[in-house]
Image (cartoon, rainbow, N blue to C red):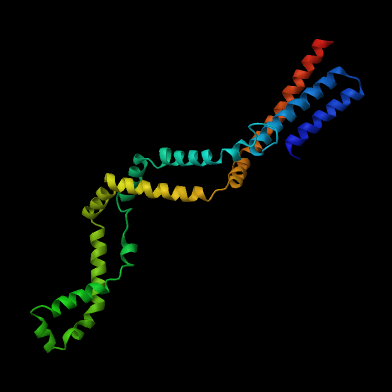
Length: 234
């Protein structure tokens, strides 16, 4: 059973027992325990739901835009800082962690061979090439040329000089600003997908289980205050 409901039922049972047995101690303990538990339960409920006539209730849905802005501020100011981005780039660029081979393997190098053939055909060797069958005579070289070109580019990309050049470019102020702008745009896009109802449910799911103990302790301390009050009035 929900601990908030259980606390309220126990407080009511204590109140009923005090009334039935004409026990001032039980009556006051039950009354104050129920009062404390109900008050705390209502306060928790007012965080998430608008209660007519109660100003300030439904604070989480009402502060929806401020909640989104706070998330964005937290992400940009605490996580995606210049230092954190720079640290990430350094870790990715160090050693052999940067591997461009999968990207290079997706590049079509066939146009490179076609451009080379066109240059040869338009050069002083064009006439000589025409005597041996023209550009068609070079087509058997296409596959090995593309394969060799791809392997060469992979080898170049793994050199320290290229890695350092990419790292310097990525760490330039203009590039850093562009990276942060892209990250900010992604965060804005995701936050715009949130609705007040979704935010309410998300926060409610995170903290309501723990807030339930406020009801329990409200009942406990309310009951203790009731016992003290009963003792003072005897």
